[in-house]
Length: 246
Image (cartoon, rainbow, N blue to C red; front, top):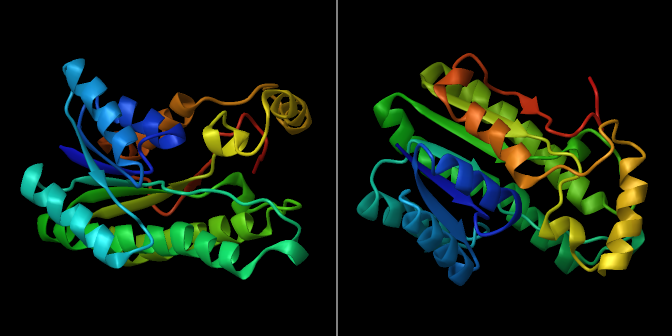
């Protein structure tokens, strides 16, 4: 079986690539091709199967090239983890048009383009599984993260719509809503000292009392992309340490 992981060179994507490679050929897709290749080389050196490909998920041509490369060099795409993303923090009044557009293009358009590109092949085989990265913030308002929250809410809604359309045709589509995970995005723009103080603030709302790890999110991704989740579609699953409870 083969899976594409976008944003696979670091953070949650890297964690997912490492775990999924235990049972699938993982195509690590990232703008950082050098990072993707380094991870693929490491996994291959451990006796697993991995490949690396460069992609800008905000570009339809780049996403199409990623899929075409995978079909030609790896084989059918059985699963997708659409995970690529980044963050910009600012008060709503200070969000620039450029940052807003970039966030929407990477998160929302990127998930849409990646899902759209792999679905035809899955339809032809009558089976497939997709997981999109949303966030706890899809259902929480968070100060200074207006653009990020808007994107993650849109991804959740888009996931449900795609699931409604394609689950009857054999494709399960779910989303994950991670809580505070120790990743480069969470540390972005913060010194170690500032990050330590920020973590104390974050953990006040996390009953488990600690940050999560990328592998703890990857466990949920692996489950949702497997036949163990054969009766689950259109859901937002929260590996979040209890930060958000339903």
